[in-house]
Image 1 (cartoon, helix red, strand yellow):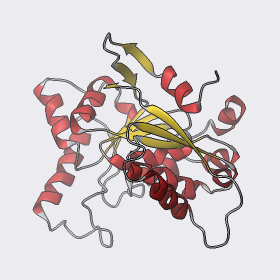
Image 2: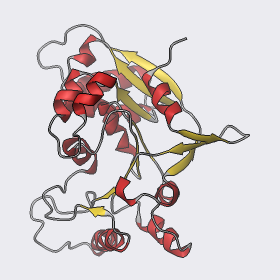
Image 3: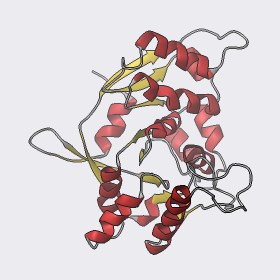
Length: 259
């Protein structure tokens, strides 16, 4: 029986399997934002640890920051403390940090694809449920809890159970006015908000192949709204064209030959 793309990527990232079936799973890239990372970094300090592979960690505030004028101080004290703490943690542990007014600062799940940090075949985690967005690039991407953020910081691995897999195929040509969000909302209406619980969804079919990368990001982002662990779309020419000449994706042509 042939393996799905999800299964192929998953198996390449299994480090070890414990007797109870729990998997030590290697993570290619960790994204950190200001809300779910403070306790994780505090845990590192308490144990006298440092990030195991700092070059594979990218930090940026994006949840509690001004959207119009970032030159003004953050007024809410809790938000300001979270943003300041992330900046300090990134500096203390020598991690890449895209802070306020940095030209690369933005929504963390958009910055990854736009800069080429997110790449096909990767495993990606972040302390945020919408990490599934990165699956649009042909990656296994999912949200994790703060304790798992600490685990990834310390070891570049997390302990996981392999999710079940589901394929959703959308064929045919869409009519004018039908958007990628309409695709997702229709699927959710049929699946219900818990219909994909415990599954990782692979989207396929003619209609999916004819979407733009931005539309794919939307579809994969909304996978969690039906309870899925994440969603992904196999990389194709749309993916390679999107990644071409991105700052951190110099190997786009090599992927095309490999995948």
